[in-house]
Image (cartoon, rainbow, N blue to C red):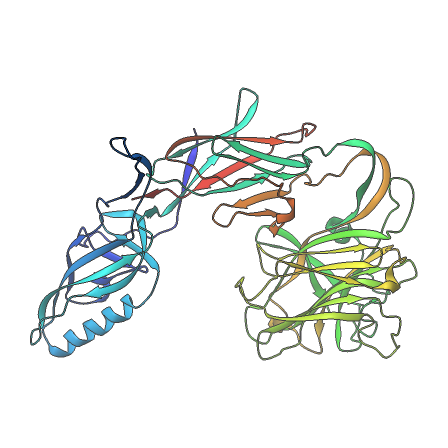
Length: 521
């Protein structure tokens, strides 16, 4: 068995009393002069409620199940202050700390476990004294305490099967998080234990037959290796300048295509652009009537007022804009940016700075917080799909589909990536991060008898959040992949053997990581 711990809490200071309590990350002894924990009760054995049924004429009863009530922890403390003012300030600070709700409660004699609780009642403090002993109660709706570390297990081969042996040393069943990294294409993922079965994808997906396949025609490397299109015209923003350059840089250990230089200024924004002409598919046919494109990006300002603009445009052979995505920040004092869904505009005028029709504009904050910025590090996913007249955009975990009759028969033959700065702004006035570290475009529904680019590609990551029972592919929730009858099970106390299955034609088994957080009464 192999597992490792992922520490998520600070080391407790050694001079604290054994039963000192950390409330929402704060030890009261460290914050309140003269405060000291005397003892704590309510952390030990908890009485169970037994449910049973009886039958007339038969002695005894039939056991059904047991449940546990909520838990109340009582903290007895002493507070000694040498002045009335310090005494009152001490209680002001105590009230401030204990006002937080549903927080982690950690005790010094058990720093590797926490309860979730809220301060409830307390005893009355004896008046007229600056040296008092009192008690307060912590209400824990969930009576269990949890490990402060996640326990991780890795997949191994046993008797020609891919398994993970989970060892739960807690007293309660634990939810299970999964991370499955595919080392080869597959169309199916099955997860089996004695407690349930989970299935995703298509169990009978085949690897070779008469079918329509998707073919990858371009990736980010094609743009990295392409020359700057200094003589070209940005199909989405024909009035902006593109005589500058794009460049590459390493951010967070990844290679990004980013802004290089402004070039000769023209219009409101200027910078670099690269245009890639898509090759023919494996049948020798050019142009994509139906296509899917995925990209991962950063668009982040580390100080207020930084600006910039970048876009991905999908063009016909004669440079008509079919659709695209546009990120821009013109806010030169604050931190507000915008994201546009863009499609072909049959009524475009030569004086239009935006040549496409904007179907939807989203405003957001270009901070490092996932709750504010959809385009930062781990979560900067985006994709775009065209099937005939239907075009589907992605934003903040949701998909938005539109029907645009004018684009039904338009074929994508080129892709443009452009990154620019606004006006005469330079230096640190440009976005701190603005660029792409992943891009590919696939032509969909290519008629072939050949190897199928399957549902889950090589290097794709399938993950399951055990707490919410949500299934993700490359960080994007794909609950529609869940096969009817799937049961999300937990790891019971003791050993749980979990087996993993993929499509029978998958060439290499995936890499499996499983994580649990142990719990105790």
